[in-house]
Length: 489
Image (cartoon, rainbow, N blue to C red; front, side):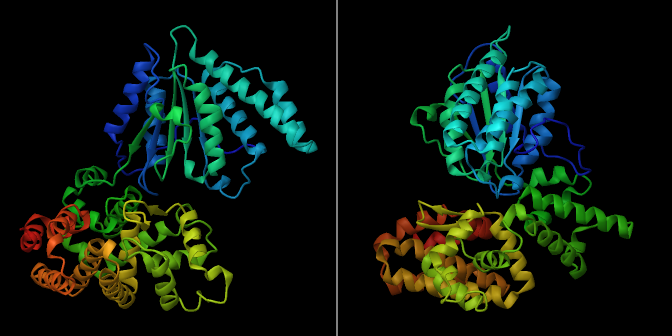
């Protein structure tokens, strides 16, 4: 019956150093402190978001819950984790009632104050066992919602008007209908007092459907680790941080894996790992193996038995965005055994929908294409380049040619496609380890401009390149200045 573990308990800390994301904690701590003195309607729902492996659950477990227990031990706290145990369950009235009961149970444990809903629990369990009909369940669910909101009011209106904290983790595993129900039936009813604080973590920015709730929402992004944060995870070897970042792309889950490998190698060899050691083939192999192990988790790619899904994402990983045309042409060429046009499952839209269901792929409105979430995409592409270099290079070549062709044929997206074609040409130059990739890239760009007569759009093209994170990261400031110099008018 229970959804998942709602008890708020301390977990033994792993041996590597935890990066606590102090800025995010201070923002949440500020909202709690405000509510200790007066009601606050704004920022009543803090929606934490970031790609898989970015450290949301670690933050909730290692930083938020730990510090709540240390600093605010008297505050009522309840937590629900919509983890993989819920991924395959049906999101119906039974689950909604279980969520309410679990949240109440968490509050009873943390506050030592009974909600007095034992009779309602018995009615709920009896109704489920007897399958007594939808209307009966709806009535008891309605009673549970009222009991929940009254209990929250009771907890928050104790002497001193203590805030009440509700934590929902991995919300992306919940059905859209359940998220809407949580917002409309629970958040709307509990945030109007100004004392309740919801903390909701998921991979995508949580949409707020009830318009009247939007002013109470605050979206809190989690970004990949910077070099300084990686250094704090491996304080024994701060000089290795940049090299580790080349493999992890700042993804905390990957960084932790790589640090564990380095510490393991040191233990086995009984000597410190130094920067040149990371270029040795046997060390590289262990680093790549650790990343592959990370990606084997069901948490990332959904059902483990769906090998084709992970293969499809692997093939698409060198691309920064893709569409139906890409899936229709690229996947059959690179996965001929798995992709059969006679199968219903080979429909491109169906394939993309399966990818979207992993929560690793989403539609980018501004770029009008599907994107595989970064930095996970970079890690998958790195593994592809290491394991199947010919395939990786062939995909880059295919993409560079195809985007250039589309740039000629689709005037409305010409500049976007030029930038994508240029990006894949740059990657091909990096594969060749060209001594001066910028000069060759400038020649390629000038050729594109001449062939498509885009002189009137050079300023706009320059602005697109200047704002492109990948070009900035790869070329650095001097290379970027050289690349955009011919575009200045």
